[in-house]
Amino acid sequence: REVGPQELGNMMLRLQRGGCHNINFVTPTHFMPQILEALGPAIEGGLRVPLVWNCGGYESVEALKLLEGIVEGQPNGSRRLRTIRSGCRRR
Image (cartoon, rainbow, N blue to C red; front, side, top):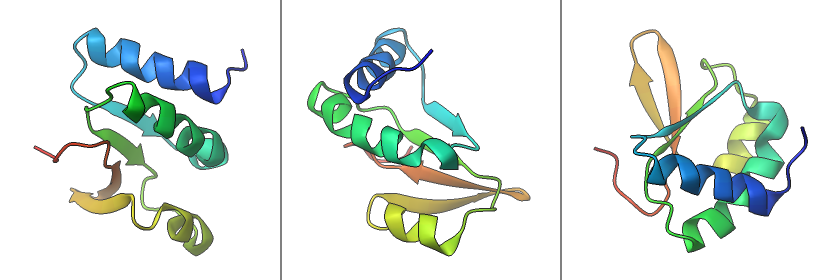
């Protein structure tokens, strides 16, 4: 089912309230614009858990440029994780 940015942000907040430790987006590139748009309302609503951008290390230069400034790279074994900062520090 299709959801808008506000509803996606609310979904992230519900996961946080439910006790999740992070929100892991797996191969999310094709939803990047919608995810980034949903972050504003989610952060304003109190989102503080880390968001994991799990691209498996296969992100285009263009996509990385869009994420620049809000994403930091984190190596994890042979897989590369990208973490979107949501107002908190990575633990």
